[in-house]
Each structure stands twice: as structure tokens, then as C-alpha cells.
Amino acid sequence: MSDTQRRLLCLAVVLIAGVAFLAAAPLAVLFLCAACLALVLFGPYTSARPLAGALLVNGRTNSLMSTSRAPDAPNVFIDGARWKSLWPGDQRDYIVANQPEQSRVERLVGADHLTTLAIRSGKMLLTDPPISGSQNE
Image (cartoon, rainbow, N blue to C red; front, side, top):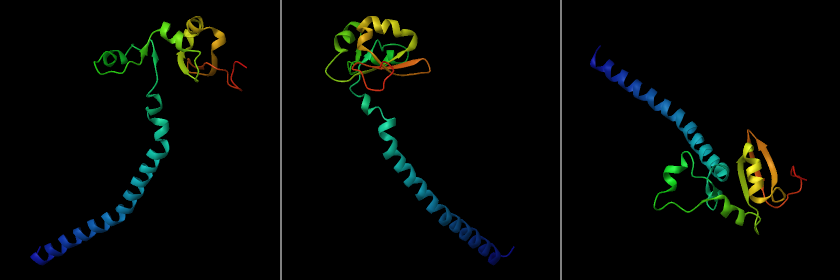
């Protein structure tokens, strides 16, 4: 292969690579725009920001145990007695509990102070004031 042929081959490879890049660039931009839009639209549903003020009743179990006792950890873990004093409060509160724990939860705050919103996969979503259309009505 002569020197001229090598140069032409090199030029052809560079041109093909450039064309491939130019063809892929709009798709990359489209993907990045779609990803940005998805983060904006679904961020409120996937982030923990709404839970920033949440209290966890008896939450020091499993993987939460190690970080819950850190010196700078927020005091979000409460026991049943504190939860009982807070539950029928001025604002709507929610609790997620395992369905087998239903009788214990009802004993703590009273069945009349619990409204079941949903039961899925062995978990219950409960709230304090009744909501129209809930399972308790």
C-alpha cells in the first residue's frame, strides 16, 4: 500500500467517524432532553423531599438501625407512646404498617381514629381523620 493510499484510507476513516458522530449527536441531545424532562416531571414522586418531616414509629429496625444513632441524625424515630400522643392531631397524618400489625396499631390509638386508605402487598396506608370514599366509610 502506497503512502497516498494510506492517507486516503485514513481520511475515509475520519470522514466515516465524523458522519457517524454527526448522525448520533441529535439522538444524544434528544435523549438528554428527555431525561431532563423526566427528572422534572417525576422528581416529586421519586424524591424523599415530601418525607422530610416524617416521623418513624418504631423505625429503628433493619437497615435504619445503623444510621439512626449517628450524632447528626434527625430525631425522627418515635415510640408508640409518643405516636399515641400525636396521632389524632390538627393536621392529616399518615402511617404505613404491616397488615399483621393492624390490631397493635388499633390498640395504640383506637380503631375509631384510623381510616384505611389502601391495603397492598401486606401493607396498610392509614390516616387519622376520615376521608370521603375511604374503606372505613
